[in-house]
Length: 292
Image 1 (cartoon, rainbow, N blue to C red):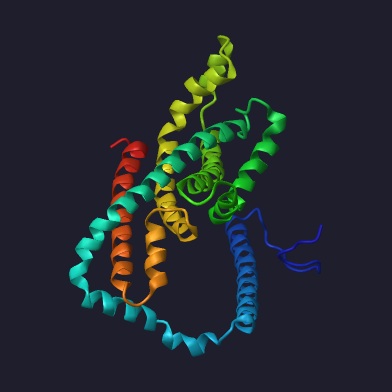
Image 2: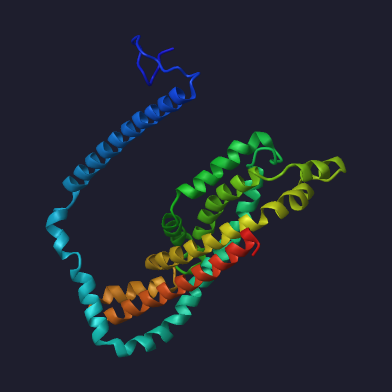
């Protein structure tokens, strides 16, 4: 067999019985493979940049000096009308609550779906082992389709509002969490499952009593992390008519100059909400995983 690292031609080969020679050979192979990957990465980056530059309406470098013009105009108007910000905060709170509700319900529904899919797709735990590829491909499909695409499809069926947003985010969450839940379940100790099986427990009982108590802390940790992501997703879906604070932000930006103070207020409110959610969920994730 041809030696990939040293080529087919005869010559010096490292003495792999010598630990120092074996280690140096391993380092050389890693450097060679790392160099090849780096060259390929640079080549792909350069070709992608050139293609994007050709298809761009204007030159990137020519437009770069204008990148701060719009933010400067927005913040300048918001600073001039800074006295209006507290009132805008209060008016936007109901929309923020709607956004949080969308994210919470979608996360709950997606997590429930992910629990079932993950257990059915986990080797050694699946009830129907032959259907494992089917359940795995189902999770792949749910992850592959962006929430906004699902939401736009559902708008034509259900009309605008929070319901399409909840369904769209829940479907994507089911695929994303299902993958993470499955990886956690694969590392579960099978001895409790075997013990339950020996006394006649059915598949549901084995999962509920033997697996879920082991994986619950990590599952809850991932679900809390996904809730943070879904808050951002529900705000983005507001731009396509799904309600919540994203819809208010879209309207404020459409009106343009004269309502930039509202744009900044909504951004600040959303930012503060995400910071609070991140802080609280990080605290609970730490307690769940570390137990302290």
